[in-house]
Image (cartoon, one colour):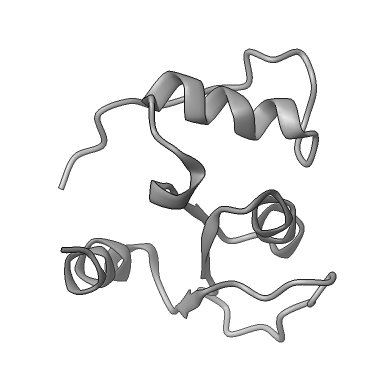
Length: 91
């Protein structure tokens, strides 16, 4: 499973500023309901979750998750598990 587009921060601000997430929607031409935000950082996951993205937290070290006001939709043990999870949870 390849990614059609890699997005770097072109918005001149940093996460969790909404402009960063809005850029992703514009570049992908997708509504946030169709975007899965994948991160290994609790603060990135929390920012994306507050914005309205579905969130996958990759917890390679098995650390306790810092809630920061929101929880990820799924927690996986490694990045390699993400494609299979997407296949199982999309129509």
